[in-house]
Picture 1 (cartoon, one colour):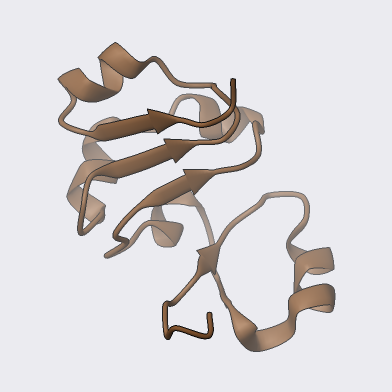
Picture 2: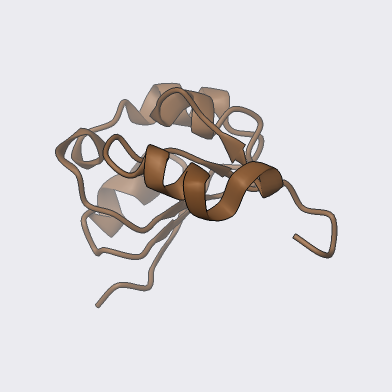
Length: 92
């Protein structure tokens, strides 16, 4: 944040608590697709059901760069690469 990046977050359960703790230092998204709008990358750090089967086409079209860092190891690397994403699993 100190270097001027914008962090946009979405969590279907923890948004209220995140807002209480972090305040307006970050941007809060309405849903997963709003969270990745014009994003340089997606970092997945929770494994809620709605994150497990997103529309890869919609994500790719919405993101500025098709880059995913999977902190929970919930996606299939081959499937993501076949859909044109740069994919790194950091949750093994």
